[in-house]
Image (tube, rainbow, N blue to C red):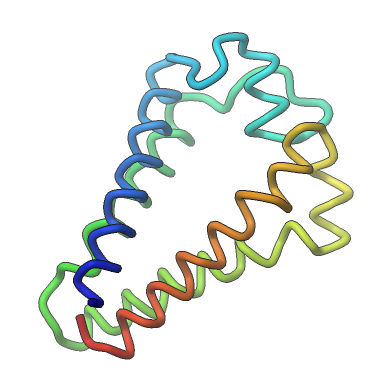
Length: 137
């Protein structure tokens, strides 16, 4: 059963990495208008353009590592990596409900999406990595 969890998480993380790679090459998806995409995906009131190719590509690479990590063979490196990935997703998952974060990321619809989708997704991924860590998959 944990192999199914690892598979679902990997597919999801690969899809997210692909979206970030699209943004890195300047392909605006799922919203074609850059300003509307910024409002939905960046959330900073003063932002009018998507982040550049390097930040988007770095996030894509991080997501690719997270997608592959459950499939790395056991050992201390795998265990440390699982804890690190779970911690990063936990922190990102908690942020939408922190006052400081909410003061910076106020632009709609990002602020709503962050609390409704992005934060809970990150919390779910964190829990998934904890389960995989505990089960040793």
